[in-house]
Length: 146
Image (cartoon, rainbow, N blue to C red; front, side):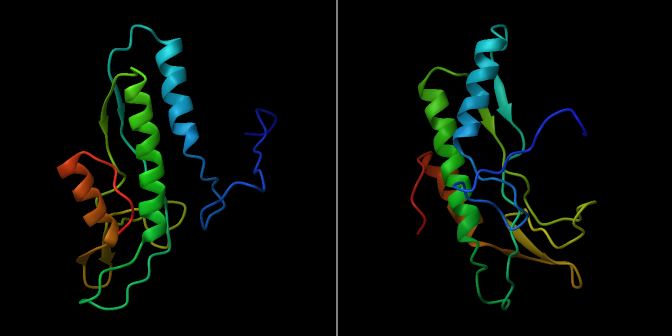
């Protein structure tokens, strides 16, 4: 979008494998902005949030360790919880996506899902993040990475 804005990548902020900045506070800032700027909005749903990551599949009997994704989700859900505590009406939060999929810009190289998909066999395998997210849904408390 030439001449519309400037993309700035501060060197002190972490980034994904694709150089997207990881800035969890932005989640709270955006929710607060929507709440302040649109007073007639009584319900906010976050419909996509996750980090693309280069998952490593080792074998069928080993859980895929995607700890950076869990850390990303943990930090962002903490910001959502902070917004709810501040009275911002967040009524839903959805991870993108349940499973890995094809991306028009990255093909199959960027994994977003909580389940790994072996695209040759079409078999799905749980990642460590799915167990973390399941625990979050069950106890409704943001837990550290196990």
